[in-house]
Amino acid sequence: MTTLTVEHLSKSFPTAGEPLVVLRDVSLQLSGGESLAIVGPSGSGKSTLLQILGTLDRPDDGTVRVDGEDPFELSEQELAHWRNRQVGFIFQDHHLLPQLSVIENVLVPALATGNATDAQIDRATELLSDVGLSDRTSHLPSELSGGERERVAIARALLMRPAMILADEPTGNLDRRTAESVTELLLRLQRETEVILICVTHSDALADAMQKRAELMDGKLVDGATV
Image 1 (cartoon, helix red, strand yellow):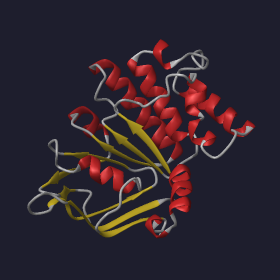
Image 2 (tube, one colour):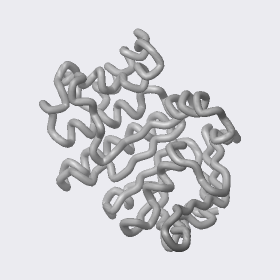
Image 3 (cartoon, helix red, strand yellow):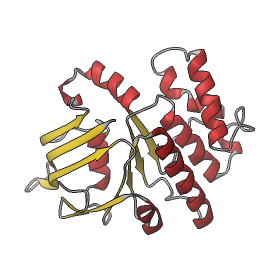
């Protein structure tokens, strides 16, 4: 079972005066099948933490290990390959490519390394069925509702069978009923695939649906997920 271990993570950004410290000594540990909501006010460092966990940014200090491996020890090319295989991202604005069909958008992680295989196309088709969009595979994103676009993003995040799903405000642009439906779907698929799910959110409803909840306060992660 996959394990994520984060120890003593720190991150700051230079300013005209003193450095702006965003993360201070953040530690957490999760295993496959577990879900965590990270809450906190705007500007508290939630998205920065998510970017570091997804290896889109590097910490100043501390370590991130997935199954004992520190991805930041890899070369840039190896890290990009690792990220594509191990991390699935879901964003508030879904980031679907407008010129691609629904199934082509789901296949984007596979296309990043060449042509999609028959097995990957079959998996994309299966995932679109799982998210209730089997009749939308040839549609463009502009022909979908907001909730449907977010469902495509969920399917895309799961395509490569990642160890972790990192979601930044996945229900932030949705109405209450659609947000509830997307939350239920995301958690069901996460449990079925036994991936680690970490959501950054301002939504109490989404946070309450997760197994664990932690808050970023003054750069520190507090509550039940800390170690």
